[in-house]
Image (cartoon, rainbow over all chains, first blue to last red; front, side, top):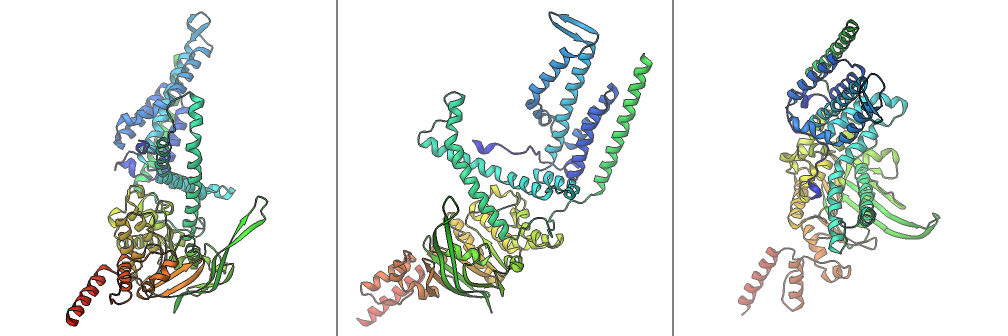
Length: 274
Length: 290
């Protein structure tokens, strides 16, 4: 049962977006998020929407997958919307009892909701089209300059990729231990929250012990195969920019410029409106 | 020229108490002399706790000797500057297939060793292809190791070692966690490598069936080498093997019991086929005698 959980949310495919260098996708996501928060005119939101729609279409990932991520932030979004709606002062529109809804509040709530939704969808595009491994590789390469200030970039990336490799193994193990304990009468289902938490102990202790044993074995196997950090290490699948990656960077730059201009137009439009 | 050469090799495990003082010392390997020639297929047999795994870890310089010396391809394992040379010339395959696969995709895992050695990218791919083909796992190159069977995972692990182009491969009970089919798969692969690539193989196991095709069998007990010779020589001493709590192959055991019952069979029968042939021979002799 527990084995069916898939990790990461990679949606296999062969679109241009899938084949892009992970660094481009990381940069793209970053640029998109910045554009969401730096520019806030109606025109800019339209621009962002068009850009996002275009990327999603090109990636050929079904929209339902993109929207799946929204479930997890539903409550956060409700909070933000409600707070913005009621707490921002300005020209009152509706007021009842002690609550007043203002024009500014509505504007803020709507724009915050749009930002959050686009933020989640935007990063979903990246995680859906990039394998966890590529993502780690991309991060390692992108953060490489940080090595100068002694950030152990390679080690962090290695830890991440090993964690990814072992998650399914540990899940399977959890399943096995659970079944073994259930066979001997353990009850993981009934009882209140505290009871349930307590019943996790006989599951977690053996799991931890086995994880440590695996870590020990793995460390030995890595050493036996000559692992000694990233010094003098070569890459089997090095990240190399292709033509399409350069194109993607240009498109990103174009997007930023357009967004900047759209925001300006919005600003002037606002002025004229006055 | 000997690729592995151990002289009076000993290793102690220290048990420490809470304050870090030595509580007790147990000697896992006790003055072992070992010579392995290049291209040989050597099997090391022994009951649990006989020190065979400890010995194996010395050859890859994961453990260092407490006493004595160990030369691997001419390099002393105590010489730290030669550590990576030693690990490259003596590759190691461990027992648990899950705990030694590092990559999330088969080909990435096989490339891990060459990556560490600093092999240029292009050559890594050539090596990965060659070693995956050598173990018959090339079709699975883009699979996730989690979806493979135990025997397949172990073959990937072997390919990972082969890609480092070692002169010698040490397999530490590579089949202990596998089903009979997986066991056969792995042993067949190892024999294939030994024959086609002339890799020296050191197979550590407690399954007798796996050692009958070896060039040399070494039996260990309580840290010492107690028997040494060709499989035929070793298995003809059934009573002695039993005293080390080791089983002998079934055919050998049957032949031995028949001998004891007064039937005249040759010593050192290893396989069912040999037993059948010997019995036929015996029957013919009986008829002629009558």
